[in-house]
Image (tube, rainbow, N blue to C red; front, side, top):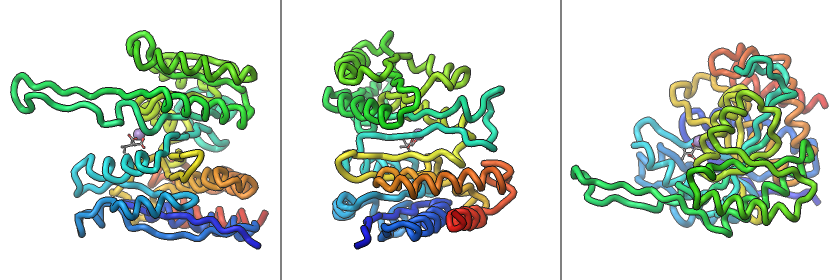
Length: 355
Ligand code: IPM
Ligand code: MN
């Protein structure tokens, strides 16, 4: 009997639908070669639906999504919707409601892609950031006093629970062991200033780390990490950090691996469902132009296959992506690729079928 995965698809806004279309082509091609199938159910969440109906993310839809094996997301963000509404209403709401407490973001430079880092190549840039995804400054704790007066106070608190920190750090150790590269886990914090939050992180890191004698433990402040990611990215294997620092350093990570055109990520509950997405935005100015790079979305699909345990299919997709980078693409940047969005998808499908 063939196994069927229930996958929710949220193409979203801007160029989201275009890149997801290529990703679905690739997922279909690769699963046709395996003993599994994916049943895709589409959801029209995003700016268009909000502008038409006022609906952002109904509770019934959250529950439905929570029962799926995985969710494949394009991009959320619409130029006609005030910033914050869709981000909080859809992205953050899903992360919190489905308790997707890990945000996993690989930083890997593939051969044939230019990095802005001088003298660095694929042998130097291959690490993962495990970002805590449900707490920290993103928890929404705080408020205003005397708003819109000269005495106004705005407070935004970082929430760090022992349980939340521990499950994130444990995942990072397990992930580091599974990846089996340098077997080194770096905690990224700011213990010299944020002496409560990162004191907790550091104690939990040491406690949990005792069960992982095979993993080297390392610590660096977030500002220093930004420096080392540029100067010595080869030092890193897996980096674990809180929500805000993880948000910031993964944009830097995306740039050193060749840009938003290739950077993918997963929002994961290891015991539940997960959302895989290209980490760049909806890039509305490229909508409908066949110009946007679909590789980030395709690699998000590749991460989804890995997460579902379909590692052979995931490897096939990665190999095909590496071939298209080497053979067919001039750049990772929209408009400079020398090949169209759809044509990249077609090539990858061809390479998968040729295997
Ligand atoms: C990301 C994005 C989101 C975040 C925004 C859109 C809310 O930047 O996925 O990294 O800050 O987490
Ligand atoms: Mn971000």
